[in-house]
Amino acid sequence: MQTKMDYSYNCSYFQYNNVTPPNIGQQIKALGKFAMGVGIAGGISTALLIVLFIINVFTNIKKSPARRRRLLCWITSMPMVVSILSLFIFLIPRASDICDTVKQVYLPFVLMHFVDLALLIQGGEEGVLNEVVEVHAPFSLCQPPCCFFGICVHDLTFTKIRLRIVKGLVYQAPVLQFVLIIIMNVLDHADFLEKKTSDKLFQFFALLNILAFMFGIWGFNILNAALSPMLRTKWKRYILRTKVLSAFVVILKMQNFILGILYFANVIPCIIPYISPSIMRKTIDAALSLLESLLFGIFFYLVYQVSDITEMKRPSKGDMLDTPSFERHLLAPPPAVIIKQPIRDVRNIPPVNVIDGISYSVC
Image (cartoon, rainbow, N blue to C red; front, side, top):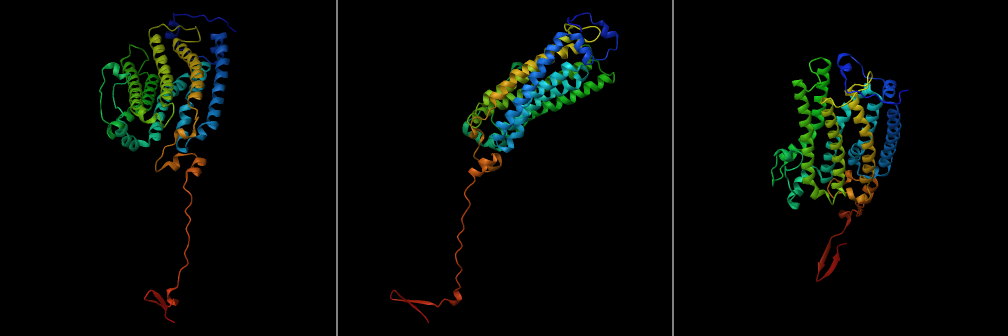
């Protein structure tokens, strides 16, 4: 087995030869000890994240209100899912396209679920609109990343239409990115598009992909800034949980974007005759993602603890469906006791006459 990686920056071999991605044996042979080390460490870290997720489900998420458990499972599973996909990308390059597509779409998909959970805790759209006047919550568009490009409007008032528009910005990111990635791969295999910077069609779809995520994270930041004054008391460590989640997503996306720029600038090396610069880019991204998933997976496990069972309880009319079953029993009002009075048969009661304060019955 090769123990030393022979890097080369003259990768014309892959431009003039139709080389298929390497299989598992070729990948390990080309990367040598690096592949063995990352593979073993990645397998151990992925197994650890799976165990942490299972523990979190049975010790914390089960204590949460029933309607929030599904959303919490989606959110807290993100490091585990990213780690599993990254391990597959690293060890099985021939599955890298589909795994990378799922990984890139899964990140904004979790942001969408976090927004759903935050609105659910607040009582939905109506609950947000009812309380926003009391707490004077700000609704400002001056949030990153779009504020860096001049999109900055202060002192807006909350309305249902504006709330739904900002929600739509978050919701469009996973859907639009998934559609764009599928279209790009189909056109690439149909020879209508080449994944090169000189291809105008590729540039157009790549720009749309970047804009979709940029507007998605912008809407996510707008909603979190607006809801934080109301949710600080209803969901403990809300701001910390938001920052941990958004930091993980942004780091993974920016990492993929920077490696893509380096790939198109011909900075990413290759290993002839197995690993092309494209496969090497995904391999590097997967190795870094395995490390980041382990670190953020531990953070997620600590941050998303339900230390106080009342932290996610909100007093409202429909609260019974939004609380755990054992709490539902305690919060339920005592059953009403109905005392049945005997029915008097007035037909057999003799009439009563009252004369000078004295009652006389007629026999």
